[in-house]
Length: 91
Ligand SMILES: *[C@@H]1O[C@H](CO)[C@@H](O)[C@H](O)[C@H]1NC(C)=O
Ligand SMILES: *[C@@H]1O[C@H](CO)[C@@H](O)[C@H](O)[C@H]1NC(C)=O
Image (cartoon, rainbow, N blue to C red; front, side, top):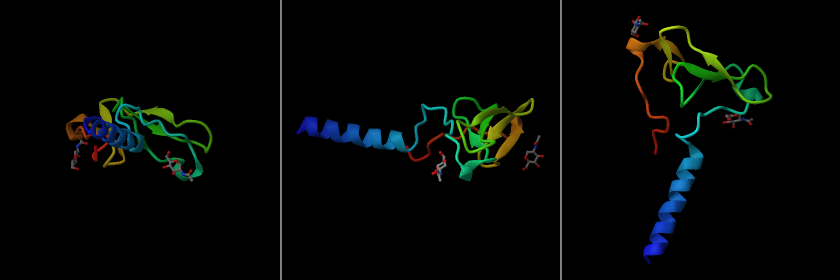
C-alpha cells in the first residue's frame, strides 16, 4: 500500500518534470514556428535563447548591459523592472 503510494507520487513527479523542467536551461530545439522568438534561459537571466533558423538548438543571446530577460515583457528590461518568476508556475 505504502509502496504503491510512493510509486504514484514518483510517477506524478516525473510527469510534471517532463512537462516543464525547472532544472533544465530551457534551451529550445529550433523549428520553423519558433524562429525569432525570445525564449527564457532558466539558468541565466542575462541571456535568452533565439533561433535564427529551423535547425539545431536555440542560440544564447546576451541582454544589453544592466538588463535581464523578463518573459512577460518578451524582452530585456532594466534590473529595477525585473522580477524573478518561477520557471514552471504549475509545479
Ligand atoms: C517547435 O518547438 C517548440 C519549442 O520546443 C515546440 O513547443 C513546438 O511544438 C515545436 N513545433 C513544431 C511544429 O515542431
Ligand atoms: C520600468 O517600467 C516602467 C513601467 O513599465 C517604465 O515606465 C520605465 O521606463 C521602466 N524603467 C526602466 C529603467 O526601463
